Length: 110
Image 1 (cartoon, rainbow, N blue to C red):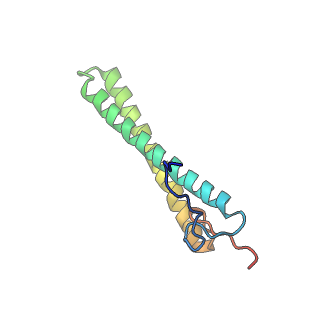
Image 2 (cartoon, rainbow, N blue to C red):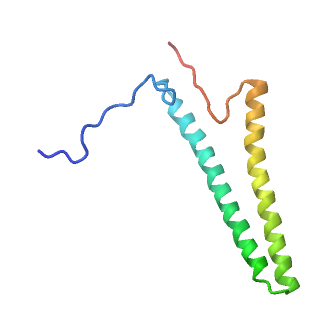
Image 3 (cartoon, one colour):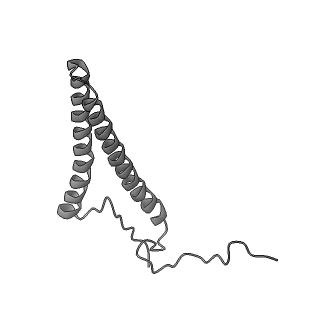
């Protein structure tokens, strides 16, 4: 029999990302999902700022096109600030309360 993918090993239980506690996989998944959503949101906002800058450069003195471009630039900047503020607030909550939102830990029976 030919092995295409090689040997598959179970996850290491002493890894800091996999504690082996029952239910920790869900919290790890949600944490990674929130981080992924923030990253995708940041990339989308960056692309929006670039396209708005191009719209502004190609407005050719038309006040309506320039106003639309500036509105898009401001909306992109506000969106980026909201995403950054969400991560900052999550970090502050973790620092002051000890509740880890972005890197949750699940404690179970030992």
